[in-house]
Amino acid sequence: MNRFFSLFLLFSVLFLSNCSSEDVDEIPQEEIIETPETVDTSLYFPPLNSTTWETTAITDLNWNTAQLQPLLNYLEEKNTKSFMILHKGKIVVENYFDDHTETSPWYWASAGKTLTTAVAGIAQEENLVDLNAKVSDYIGTGWTSASLEKENLITCKNLLTMTSGLDDSFGDGISPNDLQYVADAGTRWAYHGVFLKMQDVIASASNQTWDDYFTTKLKNRIGMTGAWIQTGNTNVYWSTTRSMARFGLLIAADGRWSETQIIPENFLAEATTTSQNINKAYGYLWWINGQSTYRLPQSQLEFSGELIPNAPQDMFCGLGKNDQKIYIVPSKDLVIIRMGQTADSSNFALSNFDNELWEQLNLLID
Image: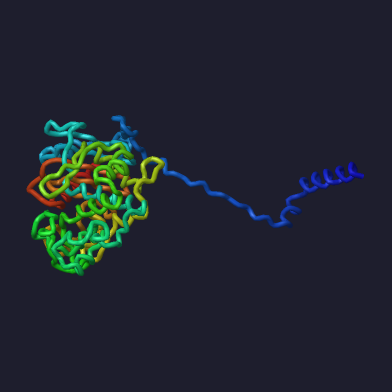
């Protein structure tokens, strides 16, 4: 009996497995389809701790090769030390001038503010910092000369958006005597060195020095070199041009390095778009192109038009004193770096050089 029953079960299984598709369709079955996570492989990332960096020829991009030398001549005339263009992570143009070399360090000036932004995003992702919390939660009260009530209005996000409400006419000093109340936080945009307090916030929250946290969480993970150097009241980053380009590539890749997400993508999207309604051309220490109005350092005037009219509308940038530049152009897969002396006259961030340079770049690229 047991043998007959076994044969019956075997026959039943064979019969069911050979049913027509019509028979199978009569029994609805829910398919579970798992979509594997994909990583964009079109971007190239240079290896860590290596001088290897792949290149792309201008001819392969169908750019106007006849305009390269005029661009380089222009850059040299404008006191440039180094210049790089990356396309999808690969080097298209890399030139050095005035005895500057691939291994020569140079200062980022205020373009380095964007490094503080990046690390703030990492610290928030690690639940060390809440950007909406008040600064005094992390570094204690009395860090300004404002009343306790007014000081407690200043959040970490106010530091990143230049809306602390503190007086910018006292220079870049960040001692309490230099940080005087002018307006409630969030009601006034003013370019101010008080953003450096964000580095103190991160150091306090992480129980590490700023340098150590920065090095571990960002610098080493993308193969950067360089160092923070105290210059007067400011903390200025110095590195090679290629290290600045590595950081630019990280930002262009939405905070990812190869297959590792280093800066949260959603945070970076916030940081590189308009962060408040006072200066539409400013994010979290990043400058934003393509807006209808903008404001400039050392001024409370609002100017009509785009920040850099000749540049692509979707471009955003890190701009530093005397024309240190990090341009990111998502629509064209470009990262462009310029280091050097001031092109024309001393400036805090934006200058006429930006628009003139983009006029030259457009002749090459378009």
